[in-house]
Amino acid sequence: MKALLVVDVQNDFCPGGALGIHGGHKIVPILNKYIEFFERENLPILVTRDWHPKVTKHFEQFGGVWPMHCVEGSPGAKFHPDLKFPKDALVMSKGMDPEKDSYSAFHAIDLSGMALANLLKTFGVTEIYIGGLATDYCVKFSALDALKGGLDVFILTDAIAGVNLEPEGSCLALEEMVSRGAKKTISEELILCLKHASTARPK
Ligand SMILES: [Zn+2]
Image 1 (tube, rainbow, N blue to C red):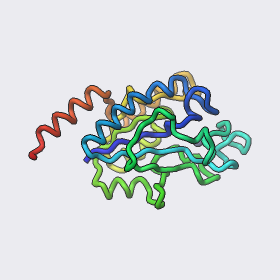
Image 2 (image 1 turned 90 degrees about the vertical axis):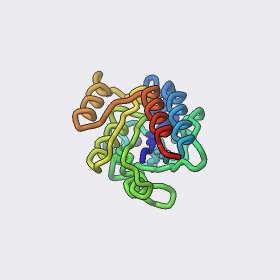
Image 3 (image 1 turned 135 degrees about the vertical axis):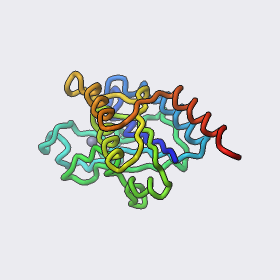
């Protein structure tokens, strides 16, 4: 069973936001294409959001690395207005613990409090396709945790963008994910391969 994980495509991570990522908004139409495809195939779609309290060690004014961003309920924490996902997509929040950075989607919980790993288990997910923001933080840590959890991990390389705090941050992150066992894919390849799988499946 495959699932799509869309990581932190929020206003604050797009240009003009508190922690705007260069080109962050450009992945939105590509992610929409993936979302449409997973929806058509009736495969689970999980959408995470950074959802911080105003005071957290994650922010530079309280000892962290980052300017204040994605404060729960703020306009910056909203999903990018062009990101389109179905009503039954699972919205997962992370970063609520003021003591932790919580980059990984595996720290996220859904509205009922269920953790991502448990949800994936419930759905019987064995392969996870990851896109979103940012390549070098939340996407990377999510991918590494997914690999640790024994999942097959595919990085949607046409639907990610990085912060690049260090100039090569995104490249190094991608290399690290691949060296730990993640595979890279792009929309055309994935859609072709999923189409093939669904036509091959007995009806
Ligand atoms: Zn954050």
